[in-house]
Image 1 (cartoon, rainbow, N blue to C red):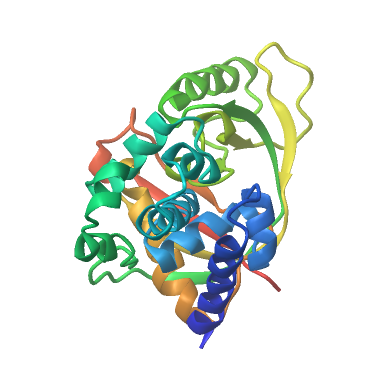
Image 2 (image 1 turned 30 degrees about the vertical axis):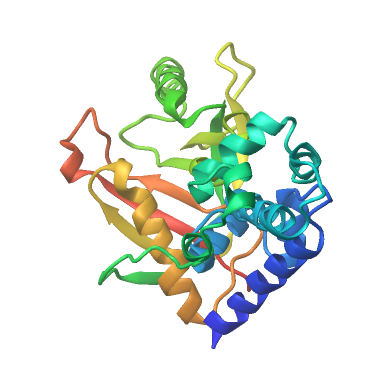
Length: 287
């Protein structure tokens, strides 16, 4: 089954992490190990492991550190901390206690192994029973104008206001007659704020000239996509996206291609109540 195939890819990543704890483990490197686009790698990893890859790496390093503490008592805690990629014994102690509810010194004296085992019981989030209709569609190439938001997802409405102002001033991508898309470079919950990007896009019929708003020209290419409709608040979209990766993708026999997932907004929060928002989520597929 496809779910087993994806599970094998994530297992390869976990094995690689555990064998290279002393190396720099970047998303780019690990997505290559998984043979998955970096745009989709985080979501597939969370779908199968229940934690993001950064947390898994931290836990793997703390796991090795816990063995050092328990069974190699001649090694100083500061040396164990540095091996685990912490800058100081204090930072290591905080992370260790937050994870295992024991300080490194207390763990070395009398490890609470039953509690320790529970930390490594990885399981995907239970999404419950959901019934969503997924279509596989051929998305037609679409010319767009876009503004790229950079930084915290919590400030994206500032960029949205700027993009709306351009649409109103230029008339090149009218809000009511053009299509509106959003294109993240990944899940903002699993990446550093300064690495997050989100393209706010509007369809256009011609090239956009240079402008003071920073609007650029682009294209969403023609490709096969899985499409699912999300109803209601955008705050809850991550649950629908996670279902798409965790449930549908794992059972579908499909694989994501190199393009990031993207959204099409059919209405907006300043036009309707949040409960009436309609958003299509597109997952680009191979083939």
